[in-house]
Length: 345
Image (cartoon, rainbow, N blue to C red; front, side, top):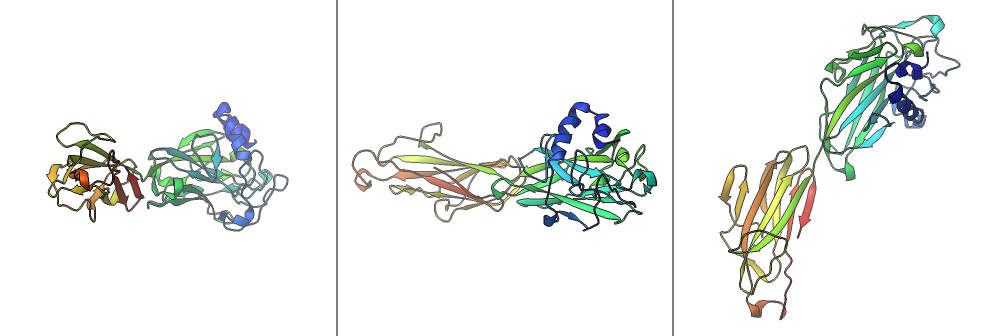
């Protein structure tokens, strides 16, 4: 039985799309994204012994050595993908004992496992394995890669309870051990035994969730004594203005070593003793320095935020740059260890 008919039993509509995606998955052997380097076989000449994922022209799949792929929509699969915060991605591990069917060779102790790194990085490689105690080689592996948008850092987490195995006999739930020590596979039951031939092949599916690092910084102003902050305010020479800086962690991982600095324009001066911070711990006065060396804010969990408010005074009329209307542009920068620096005016 061909792979298309195997998965069509489970969902004809879904498999029609998935099969099309499988057919275009091609990675040059020179890149060696898989391992170990091993003998390969074809549809016309399958293996004379038990070996996994080594046929290079599998119907509706192509090169089986490329057996770990990723999908955002569950339809189109690829070897690499750029992540979005909070998005779940399907990882697929294709499994096929390439022994010719007439040999009736049964692979034993077959397990699939996936390594999902836990560190935060701008590029995360996952490695999938198919192991069998009587296969040659006993373990084959392939990899796929997640990327952060614009090389921004992110982390991946396995979605517990999402793993299952689908073959010609149906769908079987797999334990969370598939990420780690591995989960046992099979044909009509998950007993670790898979005979040779396409009829007995199958696919492991599981999900991982991406959490990216990102934040926003916003700067607003008002004339002192009025209410409501805005992006612009009209004042007279000698007036005081309140500046408000706002930081929010909009990503899915903690932002650390957060700092903010305000750059006052010529024609304004900081009023000492007017800096306040408001966050989940309430409102409190803080030391001067936001317009000098800047202010260290600490760390902020996802959705964590903070306001910084201080007062500045506009110069007297004869101290301003020109007669008539003067446009004084203020700028704030925020920096984190994970996402670098952003500014607002």
